[in-house]
Figure 1: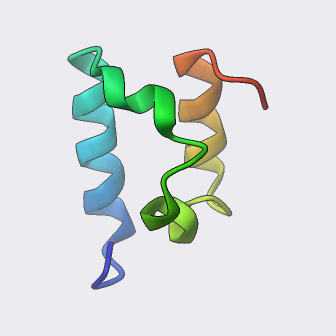
Figure 2: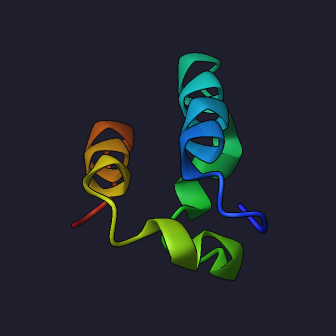
Length: 53
C-alpha cells in the first residue's frame, strides 16, 4: 500500500478473507488501510466480513 499498489493490497485482503483471518475484524481501525477506504472494494470487504458500515 505504501507504494500505491492498491490492487495488490486488495489481493492480500481477499486472501485473508478466504482464510477467515481474525485480524479482518479490525479493518475499520487500522490506520494503514486509510488509503484503501475510498475504494468501493473496501466497503464490499467490510460488508462481507460483517462489520457495521
